[in-house]
Image 1 (cartoon, rainbow, N blue to C red):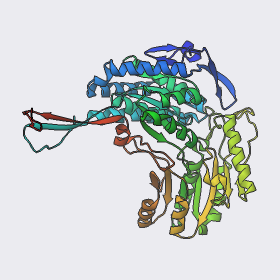
Image 2 (cartoon, one colour; image 1 turned 90 degrees about the vertical axis):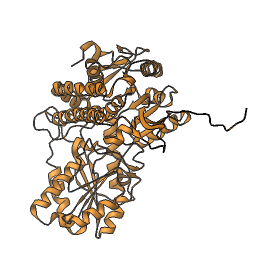
Image 3 (tube, rainbow, N blue to C red; image 1 turned 120 degrees about the horizontal axis):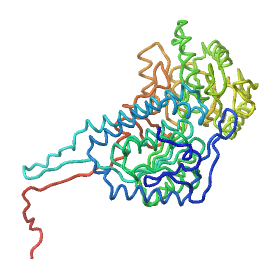
Image 4 (cartoon, helix red, strand yellow; image 1 turned 30 degrees about the horizontal axis):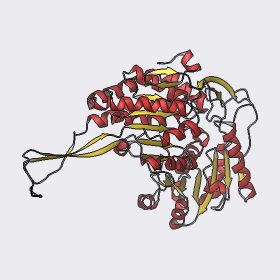
Amino acid sequence: MADSTEMRARDTIHVGGEWRAAVSGGTREILDPADARPFALVAEGDERDTDLAVAAARRAFDEGPWPRTPVAERAALLRRVADLLVRDREELGLLESRDAGKTAEEGRVDIDCVADAFRYFADLVAAEAPGRVVDAGSPDVHSVVVHEPVGVCALITPWNYPLLQASWKIAPALAAGNTFVVKPSEITPLTTVALIGLLTEAGLPAGVANIVTGPGHTVGARMAEHPGVDLVSFTGGLVSGVKVAQAAAPTVKKVALELGGKNPNVVFADACATEEGFDTAVDQALNAAFIHSGQVCSAGARLIVEESVRDRFVAELARRAERIRLGRGTADGVECGPLVSAQQREKVEAYVESALKEGAVLRCGGKRPEPAPERPASGYFYEPTVLDRCHREMRVVREEVFGPVLTVETFRTEDEAVALANDTEYGLAGGVWTADPGRARRVAGRLRHGTVWINDFHPYLPQAEWGGFGRSGTGRELGPAGLAEYRETKHVYQNLAPAPVRWFRG
């Protein structure tokens, strides 16, 4: 892997093809959330580093070869990156596990998905037609609509899926011919730093890929407002997303926002009519809520279950949630890792406390686990938590918790289920469980969410657009729409037999 101990220890800012320390000399310790111990030291950049990175990306776009590189060559480079990711899968997966707290297996799966994203966008651009011909009504006119790169892209990524979310931005940005500056989360930057090394190893020209490690209030804010940036793509929380949009507005740059979610998982009684159906629905409800300790924007954190099966369903759900094995992500047999930081755990604890005060019934969890050899007391662990008897006035139901907390609401009719599922300011994703195909299509059609899974939860396809309605954001990632985010459209009108128009006398 294109990495070194010296670079990992300090020089994690990449500008114009060179690794360097922060202008200020500042550094930040990266903590392992499983034991709260520092295990890496990265550069802590600020506005000055950001300005240098944007300037390098600007030069590379205006003067360098990448925007004018033939599509086939750009696609070939993306495929080489995918091959390098496969080569380094084990090392990168373990690094992602240690950095973000997820299990090692989740980390490896993430790397597989990152490689898939690079291959998908390589194939997509390679198969495209060079332009769309527009009939101008004259044999003497050649009129065509073409797509061109936006320019310099500012890419701001979250801490929960560091490399995966970075790839959803970097792969289409490069496929379209852009240059970029990426700012990973200051909490989990390491695999994104490693990816920049792989891009260099694959032969990407200097200045096309730049990274500034540092906090959002300096680096991210400067990227969003910078007049040299043509597009800003942000994935993260609603509050920060609003600030990004406001900062970008004066320069009228393109803005793509993928924000939060408060996602319903609707279970109809007929999905549980057989033992196999019941077991599958429970299993998927656990997966929806507790994978990566619930630190997933698309987590099915709201279980909305038909009243007639609620008691049995919740009892089994709580029984199995109590058996989830918590621990360091790299330990054998661990099913769920820690939360990413002490701050995030305190936030989760505050939500659970408020829910109990508002009348929720605790079915399991709701506290920090007892320490164990694979689960140090210093780690940021929190037990998977099921809160029953919840209602829409509770903060824990309305707001994004981003932790291992599942709330339970009930319904009696299909209309009531749809109303509950849509009663949110977010609209990212949702699930529907039913044995009735007609009901499945009806409910899916009525849900105001960007992705709806029927009898499943969490899978995504690189070919399918990902994004939300409402306050879940304005951008689209993956699929053709994900590529379109990083392009401008140009109409080229060529008159093959020009003649005077004679509008004016002279």
